Image (tube, rainbow, N blue to C red; front, side):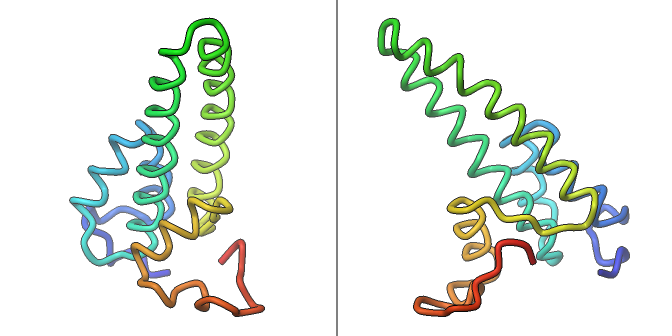
Length: 127
């Protein structure tokens, strides 16, 4: 990948990792800043969807007495593990897709035919 085609002028792998640093907030920032680099936009969209989803889920289940609080507490380590994993994968230059969220992010960035369309036998988990 050409490192010169990023809006900030730094390496794609660094920008990709930075998409995850503050969760969904940096996801929004890089979606706004980076208009042309699909690699960065993919990681920004995946960051936005994953971490905003986890945030909303933890707030919603937090309103449920006792059992909801326990579920909200369990969401934190899941988010932490995903945060570390996704930053490492992005820094290594991988376009690592989480099973459902990654497909959604890929479709939003690359278009509906990005993952081969429906009925395709050659869907990739890692691009």
